[in-house]
Picture 1: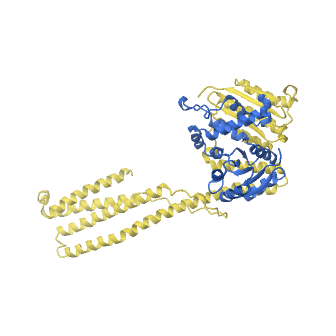
Picture 2: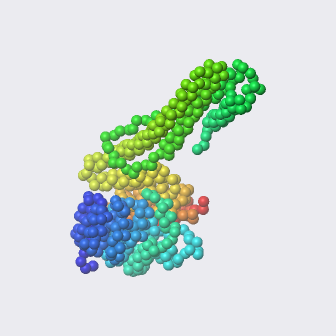
Picture 3: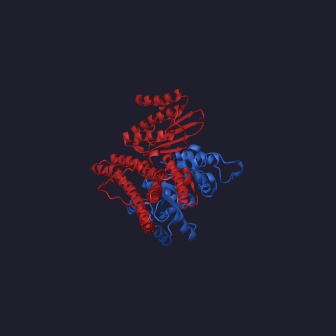
Length: 215
Length: 356
């Protein structure tokens, strides 16, 4: 942890942007804000923040569109999705587009800052809810011949880690509980994120479509 | 388009009458001579026009007898003018409506033509029309021309009516949404302003409203719960949230119908949540995680409170513990209560269930 990470906040609600800003201002360096997709692409290009805090739902294509357009010129840009929406399909869509994690807007300022730090360092951030979504998405069986073991299945260990996160354990506590190092927990979570982004598992899209706005 | 019984009957009658009328015309023009072998003189002059006229009248009656559309209630108005939300597609019946209206139009025209034809035929047969035939022909041509001119207007009128109805349905939906927001969100916001000095109460109000709004957005069928295990667990958590003004995060994976095993887990989970809400609410949100599948249910309730040693618990907590562990055991499951390294307590509930 050297200097505090620089962030850009992208959300179409000005009230919410200022709320987040005041909560994390002491812990991170807020270098910009944006309220639309256009503005976001421009601001991110100009300020080149360590992490973009990205709202999932925005007029004009939402967070997915911002990621798509920024990635075209700067594939290394890191995003953390932040949303009130718990709709699985939206969350999975933004993570598959390239966000390195998802947290709900009810997160505390301190936790948010910690999550931003982890995304800056290239790790993945899974909230309990995202962990639940992923477990749900990777549940069930796939026909043998279609399985790409590299991408279409979670290992036992990854599943265990996700379950602990879904139960509300912090990474540190997961490590303690499973008797592994926190770095290993990070590695497992990053592996799950990669699978989530790269898996062509057809169930993943079907599953997301089936769960429109559940809860 | 499927036709109903009466419609089919009148259609058949119309076709039959057309055929008979055609034969009769041929007869009149001396191409056929049914005239001679059916009857001579007066009786023929009466019967065929009568048949035609009755058929025409029947068609007209069939058209008017259909029950008129119930008038739409006047749109509900509130002071809140809602923003137009996603415009619903024009309702499917507007389309069907226009179609039946056109059908009615055709049927009516056909009936009128039959009756007029019958009258003409009768007049010809008793020779009252001899001189007036030219005038009648002129009149028929004039009526035909008039029909050609009026048809597009009538057509447009029908379409405008359909559009108007669709618009009314839309504005009604908007009014309903406005009414709902008024009864729920605005009320809650007012309450929150009044209780601004009690953060816990405000948070609880906001959370309850959020839940209610989410359910409403998700649609009625999900709001009521589908009777599954996940929905029951969630509503148990909501009850505890409301009763103790705490925050509970519920994450569920999979689902199964709410049977005895699932019910036992929900009941025990409710006890565990109540316990956590009473003694450990200060530590932060309480987490609930449950996995339900074909073979059983597992649920974890974890708080970030001070934690306790189950064997060294005060009697009131032991009572709760009994009701959790005891309940699970009675249903053939198990419950373990463990202090989590760091802080807090986790209750783990497990039960196996028969596949459904």
